[in-house]
Length: 216
Image (cartoon, rainbow, N blue to C red; front, side):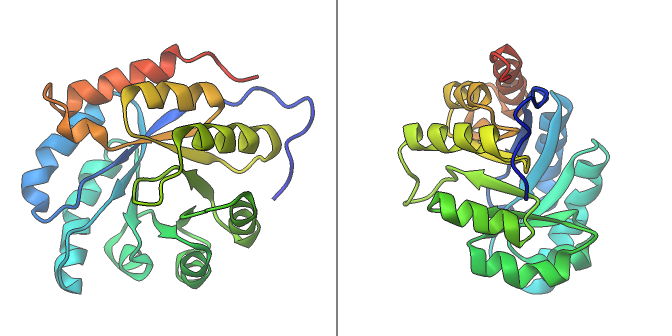
């Protein structure tokens, strides 16, 4: 991991990183997912899987992989590094340094290893030094820090480090704020509960990212 050059060019505008709800019925979910992916530029999809045996989990990933990858988005499983490799996913999203380290041998060099659950700046640096392809800040859960802390962490990271960072947004307003703070990718899952439907919500979130002032 290296620091950004002092005179580095501005980073490209941030891209959406779509996070699914826990998926139990992949066939039923596929149409809405495809519509959402077709509504705007989406860089990656983090596939959360409902509980199930390994064969069921693999079949869910295999059912959705063509939908996601046909839209030129990367498919990442939420955990399940070995399953990701078996099912044709592009990588896995790991929570915590221990899970990241355990997964690297399975995922590298051909697949993406993302890192989340990073409580401190030191944890984020350890993940990057350990081989993560990106770090995520502010992911949902009981331990999510105040949004001001997420913004501060993203701004610090983009100023100092070259490794991409993902900021998790719980709303369209948060998505725009993260884009303005320098996130390379903005993770959204609120789109699935939007009364307009996920495609309209994804299009709106993408517009918020496009409207954000670029970080130099």
